[in-house]
Length: 555
Image 1 (cartoon, rainbow, N blue to C red):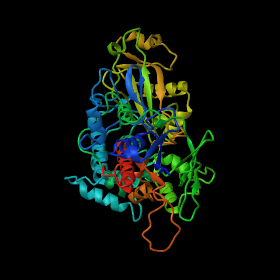
Image 2: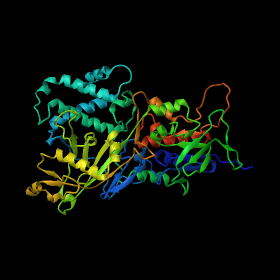
Image 3: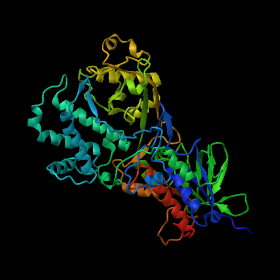
Image 4: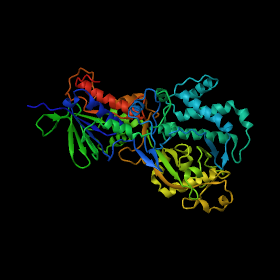
């Protein structure tokens, strides 16, 4: 009787899934040992990595940065496959080399001397929360800010605001001497600059509200040293490199898993009709087909898992054990979306000779009750921090959105977005001697009398937009994970535990086959969550777990 090869099915063809597949397939002897398959619910590989083109430039709809080049496996692959250079311009190819221009609502361009103290304070607060040593007099006040948040779970949001309060207390005399700037008081302006940095931080973490982001976990998060860069030939080139070693047909697209049957201890095995024994896991697909497996490496997003453990979803049969569902429920998972806008050339000229858009930082009034707030600036624009060319002289601008405004962006049509952005920057440039903004997306740039009278005014008009839609995509239901208040790095470790859970108890039990469902993905890595390299490491971890289980030496 022939011995059946163990079947390993990897769910998801993103970074974690393809890394696991690559490792399993390339390991010595594994081709003779395993039957390997990758099933992907979408029509493409890459998952939350999705390189595209817009306005002639290469852009990233999803994952964008290599976060530190020293020690990063992503950077190592990119270098080996020559993906760090390209003749085609690409997003952030010059890492925003231009100095930012900061403009406050009402059209007030802020002198860097007004912005720098608050920017420096915010950076010190975040550095302190991440366990970085700050060798100056602010350390003691930062420690007091952390302690003043009270006992129990502390959020980054509350710590940051306590830090701002401490700064105000220590700088009261100097701040009282700051003159009004139009309709801005000194304190209101400082708070708005601080909020601008908070909005940027929300996109870094995917926490829609920083008061939901755990303070204690920040110091556990590990950053690779070295600069942060983008990939010239696109992040997708990394994915394609990982997949290139796999034979045709091993990755199956359009195979969305709707239910996973598995066998906790005490459950009867699932019979398979091939006469070679039984397999403990059975996958049900959207098209009604099924597939049995000995091991499943599940790499879906935390958002999909959060939806899947709901009673009405029935993704797992039987349901996952309580320790696993508790970790899934407690951890944070947010939405971050990118909005790309292409500028129109003016008066038929080529863009690069007609206008250069600044690296714009936007400062908005924070109080809902102030009469100084422009009523037509949409609320979702007030919670973004910047609008900048994706590289110097590019005609493509980029803005980042997190949380509720990221979801709002997905629901708006293109005209509403264009008009909302145009209204916002029209207000910000209202006192500018350099820029004029077309009042709506249908107004010609040369149709404004005021701009025609002054040849120095550069008309800003948008031709088209492109936005990501991660929040409502059923294959992702969001962007990336974070450690929420009430959770900890321990929950990330729990996420990574395979099922059935390995027990050290000597009590008699009805054994089930081991390692039926293994979990990978960025949300399963305690110190590198939310990153592509975290997903990469998790895929390697689960592939090595199976290789070790079968006694393979190539680990």
